[in-house]
Length: 266
Ligand SMILES: Nc1ncnc2c1ncn2[C@@H]1O[C@H](COP(=O)(O)OP(=O)(O)OP(=O)(O)O)[C@@H](O)[C@H]1O
Ligand SMILES: [Mg+2]
Image (cartoon, rainbow, N blue to C red; front, side, top):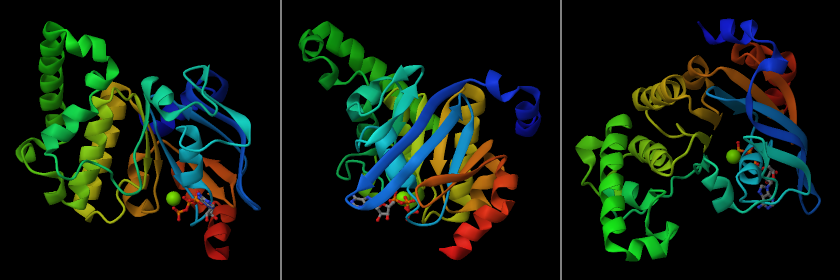
């Protein structure tokens, strides 16, 4: 079934929203960055958020993942209210973000970066870590998982390479890998293919598509490079001046006159 057939087969009220944003507002002083944003993100799907520079996309990501507090509105993830909860709490529910500029530990290797991102890592429970048998159990589990994740994100060949030596595209793959180690079931990504060469950009979106199809993972992706992204996404939201101005099937949204106008109008 194609994504279009899927959307047609299930009426909107029956589709399962894993993430709901209700009328969220956020101002920076006098500047209204989010002016009553509402969104519903369907589980196991790839949703793209487009919009001109400064339209509020990254601010929305920051608010949803707890990196910024909103002024009003509500956010729900898996039915639980997460409005203005701290990032680690939201993270623990399985909603993980990536950054516009990747933030790995540059002096650590790919494998080490994955291991420190593990949800079962030492920080999780110091007490457990001190009990040596548990500690070894965690280490083995982490190593097995990291090996599996490197296969998934196609970084096995550079397992022992320092993150500082990776290409921009490989860093983005590492970010996805770190989110997987972190136990993410939803990944909210800020411009995952910005500055990445076209073939690696397609590889990244193919991986996103595959994870959503095969593992029922949910992706919300902010992206400007529509020529690359559009073929891989199920649903689109367009923002302008802190508001949602259109939503629907990707090809409809990008051809919507209001959306075209927002880009031309700057
Ligand atoms: N921490 C901040 N303090 C003050 N203003 C901010 C802050 N963060 C964002 N803004 C402003 O809020 C508005 C929305 O910014 P935001 O970064 O969310 O846009 P964006 O849609 O992600 O843009 P881009 O496509 O360029 O990344 C902009 O006018 C921006 O200057
Ligand atoms: Mg941004």
